[in-house]
Image 1: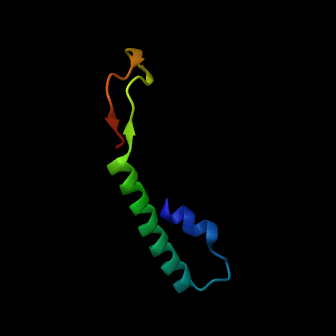
Image 2: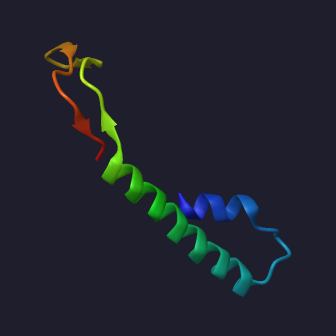
Length: 65
């Protein structure tokens, strides 16, 4: 995700060094965002799911992985 964000904001006239620095910063920012979501987000019980063996709904809270 960091690379995609960096690519979206980079001007093609920017120096290679500037592009590398922006990419490093955005990779760190995006990694921190994903880490925060993974550590803190919870999926509530009762979500309808479909699987190859049938379907149903979740029976308890789950963590985002």
